[in-house]
Image (cartoon, rainbow, N blue to C red; front, side):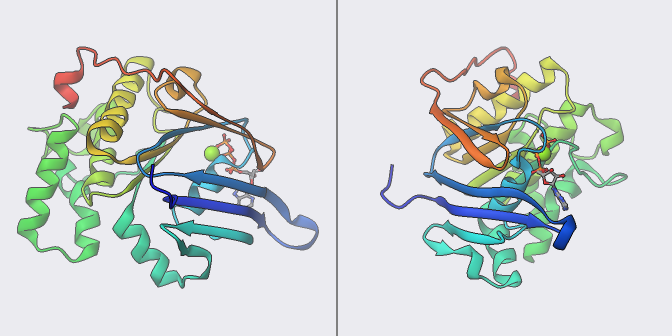
Length: 245
Ligand SMILES: Nc1ncnc2c1ncn2[C@@H]1O[C@H](COP(=O)(O)OP(=O)(O)OP(=O)(O)O)[C@@H](O)[C@H]1O
Ligand SMILES: [Mg+2]
């Protein structure tokens, strides 16, 4: 591990609303994440998991405290600077896939590159490669409605990795999937971490899924309650490997 953490949260708080309706979702979070880690974030509903993910993902800003990304003080950046950091370094995967309907897998995956202003030829090639890397070669022209939940989530992962991010942030990526599809997604996240060196932060409610991570952080009531290494992460390389290579 390098001396400089990739991500560091210092005493981060987040308060939603004001006055009598104010609610403190994060109450002083300290968290250090190094490049190459695979961290599962667990904890009860309402404990602040999504709030911390949105903060890490520059979708939201802390109320107080510091967020350092590669030593840069993110909390001092402008909105535009944060957007640049997000586009350059971060990829997102959500529970609900969040794909554009009536839009092909290929076009969904190309979107982040379109925002970046990449030319069509570069976009096509990169999206095709990303879809192949999640086991969806040949499915480029299918729309979300023509794909299973597991396949839709793989399109979403392809969209998240097409920009070659340093960090993949996944908030309950298997929350809408059955066990078999969930394990396929976990195998894929495991591979992206192990083979491609992408730092993975994943929220999950399921202990089986968290076991794929190298470290498990528990949130309770807006703070980190426990933070423990997982010495024997799951890594099956099941029969699905061919599909997910
Ligand atoms: N935009 C918002 N405005 C007001 N309150 C919010 C907002 N977002 C989250 N909260 C509150 O902050 C708390 C933490 O929410 P958060 O979504 O981070 O929980 P979580 O741990 O992800 O829960 P779950 O497991 O249900 O997804 C909750 O009590 C929630 O109601
Ligand atoms: Mg949540």
